[in-house]
Image (cartoon, one colour):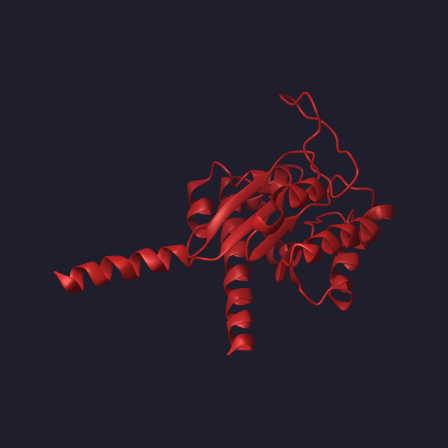
Length: 202
């Protein structure tokens, strides 16, 4: 009996110790919300707080889409709302609706706020760019770790290249197959980041 109790306690402790992840995204990552394969990947070893809405932007007010009467909260507002409850990791997939001229400034504003809430690791996805519309913004993402060492780049643009079957006709929004692969991609990035953090703290 004692061993069974100990096993249950151990399993309960393991569940409590799962790192919490807040994923902040727009209509691209929103495709994962109703995709069981994507959700299975994202919750494998992590507690997920999925904050995805179409038309989301980093700092400035975004647009509205069908079914929405007001623009969604910006990424900054989401960070401010959850604050110290964001968790061990924050994943950001935002940019398709942003002004390229402001992207560096707004990225820094979001990172500064995440730092204030002591988020240790931020995984920032590059933007899927089949026609070169987001080259400049992706370059800004790629140089951001020079200013923000806690920012880890997850290169979704490169990873998804050569897979047109993962996307709708616009080449950006994932199909169910693409959403499943996006979920696995984010999970792999989280596992790498968690392993790196563990090795640093040893």
